[in-house]
Image 1 (cartoon, rainbow, N blue to C red):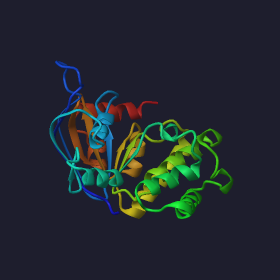
Image 2: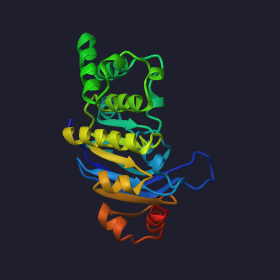
Image 3: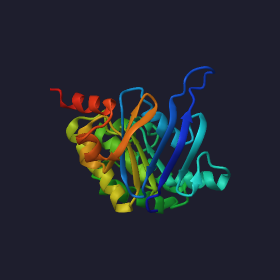
Image 4: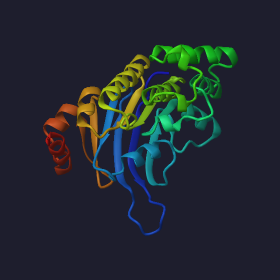
Length: 254
C-alpha cells in the first residue's frame, strides 16, 4: 500500500468531563501522501491526543478527519477494517506494547494473519525474513520481549507495525526511551522502511534535531491549537510564533 493523504478540518477533542476546556481546539492540518510530517510542542499541548483522534480513540466534539478516502470514526465494518490495515501506530513505549507471551516471530506473524496477508508457515517465514532485514539475529526470533535488548524489542515493534504495508504511520516519540545512538539507528530504519513503501508519516517528536534530519514538514501545537505549520526549514529557522521561538531557544541551550 502506498502513502495516503490525511485531512483534518476544525477538529475539537473534548476532555470527557463536562465544563472542562477541550484538549484540541479547531485544529486543521493536511498531510500529502508520502510526506514526513512532524508534530512538536510543549508537554501537554495535545500532540498525543491528535494521534489518538486519528486512531478513533479520542472523544471528538466537532470537525472532520479523513485518512485517504475514509472518515474517522469509520462508518461501517468494511471501513474500520480498511483503516485498521491502513494506519499503523508506534507508541512511545513501543517495546512495552509487545505481548510478553509472544516471541518476536509470533508477534510479526500475528499481524500478517490478522490482516489476511499470510497464514501458517508462510506468515512465520515472512516474519523471520522481516526480522532478519532489520538486523534481528536468527537466535532472537523465538525469544519473548523479556529476552530481547531494548533496541531489539523496539525493532520488533517497528517491524510488526509496518508488516501490513500501512499507508499511514503514526509515531508517538517511538524511540525516546533509548540512548541517542540506538535512537538514530532505529529512526533511520523506520524512515527507510516507510520511504521504501511510500507510507505517509506523522511523527510526534521532542528533539528538533530529529525533525530537521528526518522530516520535510512540521506543525507546532500550543495550548491545543496549531499555531504554525510549513516546511521544516521555514518554521524552525524563521519561527513566526512565540511558542515555536521558545522551542527553538530551548534546543539551543547547553
